[in-house]
Image (cartoon, rainbow, N blue to C red; front, side, top):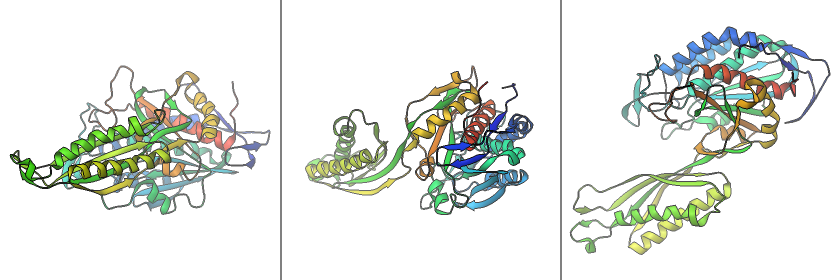
Length: 436
């Protein structure tokens, strides 16, 4: 990391979405000095964001901080895109394509249990209850990294062949019930308006990778996320006389068991999927068979066909079990949330050398798809996208999983993330970088 790095960007002649031809003479962008100069401030910003987490659609202070920093760097800034989203535009001095870089800003209703000096002790309201708030998914790292990319490129704008659009997104974890939010809302409100990007890059903190490493994948990387809410209805009776009622607890239990056959018997064994019931709730007293049971869960898939097949089979299972049991059902909600995040294969192969140049070939680790979801997918469905995983675990330390109280990310991940993302941006704007 201490070696001086120069990125070479060639003035653009012809550009398509993923390929370009360039003049022979090149201009030099010295981003190493800009990164070194801005890093102490960026670490401080990371600490401030981490210590002051805000839930989805409520990222008011975070958004204000981001907008202030982008304006300080001389970028054109638009606020309130998607409620609390921020979009910054850095126009280079040379003609070229438009590249988007995205970071998410929201936190989670999690009470932090780390020993970090800047750990969150904030509390707030979530679904009407007071809860602890924490950046238990690393969005403070994401925001700091993308601000760092702006800080690295802004002093070099005259030699930059193209335009970089910085998208700071609210509510990646989901907006409050009844509110639109996240990437889809930002798109609906013009985040991809003029200048319109040709590609988009994003990143995610990853607690199973050490600082200094990044995860790379071509094709599927994060699953589609669906959410279902079901009522299984029977007939209430005394627990001592079940023959006088219709037991929804028995029917709901059969439904939960039968749902597991979707993965094992209805989909190809080579088709990844998950059907999970996370909530089952019914009854008020030990000796009363209740009138209904509440089931709530999630579905994770990678293909549209599998997504539709799971939904169809859930409906058929509910229909069959409740008919056999003499009851009924209602699908209160079946919500398709973020689609699967698919790294454009051509783009992924093109930018891998840039990652290797930034962190070392041995530190670029090919990763498997994960069943976690990510609404970066909405952006990547509009233009080719590439989403990589950033190692955040300090050597010799342990980090809890994403969304847990003990999730922790080291400050060293910020610089690695900046260098990796700058490499991706310049690879697309300037074509293949020279080798030593």
